[in-house]
Image (cartoon, rainbow over all chains, first blue to last red; front, top):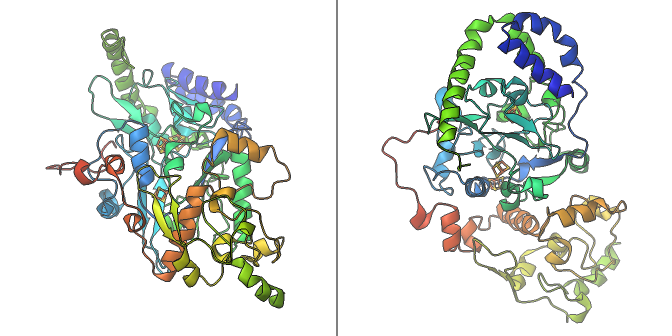
Length: 308
Length: 177
Ligand code: SF4
Ligand code: SF4
Ligand code: SF4
């Protein structure tokens, strides 16, 4: 119910053009969601970065499971680790790769540290709360999924996501749509099976289980081997908690994790952002693009009835 | 404790990796080689030279924890498992599940409130963490195909070998944003 409130607020506020007023009135609705903490029996994945050897089997498994296009390079080609995008940053997730492994050379560490990146499946996802057309859904199993027939390609979720996860498919002009890891929901999670990347990993870097059990396991691993880990389970509290959580032997801020996100769901920040920045400049262009595409979509779908 | 450990050393050589046989049925030495193939899919089976590794490892407990009756190396394990408590089965796969995250296995773990080893590695993770961990520390081979050759199915899976993508004229990395 809480989510419905938030989403209907966003939708009503924006579509009705009374956004600023609604932002002011939304404080209680937003504050009321802070204790949600996710579905009680939802599943999650604990990623132990100390075990990852950078073999990229997880990337190959994701490519196959999600039926993604052929990669630019073989999945055993280590040269991808040296690729840099703007700002000297390592690879990130794209519409062709829902997960990527990054390499960090950490001074004083004997071997490089490898870090698998994919959607973190937030308990209270910013992508979901920011979406005007309710394309996103947090399932009771823990996955954050989206309905590609509803997505209008406005890209607001890309801006809202604190982990820069959703990518955008440009491959079709009529059907631009957001693309990201869905925790293998359609093919695996909803049938009680672990994600493909989890199962494929030779090192069992990832542990699949109930989120609440994984938290216990994570803290037990730290207390069993206090010298092997920093005392922080990334994702336990960040942005209200995420289904995918991380253990590391290197402080998280040294290996590309944002440690200043706070423990409140991102909707709070989005709300303040919306309050501070004139709506017209930030959201409306995207929104209008969205509506335009939505009307195009209907025609496209008529001719495309048997697909998807 | 040290003295008892010594007397048990001879018995500790009783071990094998894959066959779920009782350790007692073995004579005073472990198997020569063991074919590790129960998980083979994208790679061929591993022919594990057990005899060679018993020569390299300081103790059977390096790989077999406490199951051969030796004191475990990890002090956390030693809190409960004393030397002398020999397990009926010492094969990796008799304890490490080959379907670790299946619904059945997760239910089994959850349904047993007395179970301490809730986070026990699956078979694939146990093999690789143990083998690669030691190989990395001791300078042994660490490449995937140093231990098992990849088959055609594996090449296709990795888009490698004859399935390697043709180089793109202007590859666009990090697209989609
Ligand atoms: S498959 Fe496992 S070990 Fe290999 S890169 Fe992925 S997470 Fe790391
Ligand atoms: S990580 Fe980003 S895309 Fe994934 S659920 Fe969280 S906000 Fe959404
Ligand atoms: S959970 Fe599934 S979709 Fe997500 S990265 Fe892993 S294989 Fe890809």
